[in-house]
Length: 295
Image 1 (cartoon, rainbow, N blue to C red):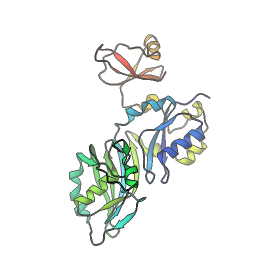
Image 2: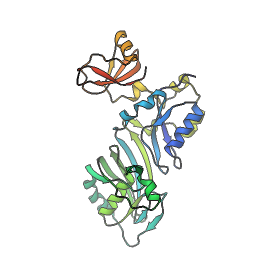
Image 3: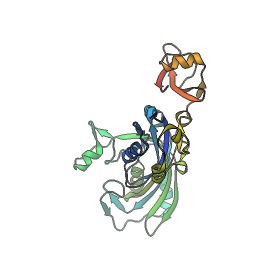
Image 4: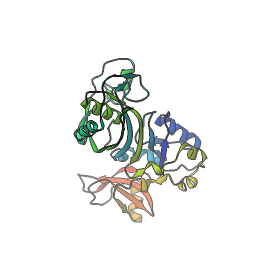
């Protein structure tokens, strides 16, 4: 059976890993190659972009896209993992107010340095940090440059000490760590009670398929192309410029040859409405060279 090539937007439920969703799609839709563009923790829900078939080779192009989250933080209690799945310890007698939270937010907007969470997948000395943390080993978490494009307090329950934030951020941002950092600036602790990714780039979770929809989908290219949550490779890479090529260039592209072009960054090369490849500028020759060939 011919394999589909494109992006499938999925609304991941809580309790599943991102790989669980990948495995489900492989099994239910009979797709041999499936990957995802951006992991979600098991407790988190929301937008997961799955790349099917040859589209799995396009992962690096999706990584820089802005991500948007809605997170509920519980102040006055800490979690070993920074989220609801960890061991929770309550710190009595420390209360925050809506005014104090709002006053703390400006320092976290824009370009900031963030410490990777101890229970993150960041590698230290060649090993994932969460593996060291599970063994109880102390880890010197690296600082990383991230960008918080927007951070707003949507609501606050003073009695429950729970705040709901909307966050739009760059890749590499740990929202649960952001909750802990906001709490630390208020001389208390916090953890992420719930986390939902609502958007990646222009792809909104409202357009994503739930697990029930995935289970009812019919395998095969034609059937997948008719599913609203399935986006062709050409459409999924909307953020790259596109160039329609002629027959001669199309033949050259299919065998990975360089072609003429003045584009200064990666470009989608299409023919008859189909994405053939992603090409980028070659500094030595001034031409375009292949980055990923799909045809």
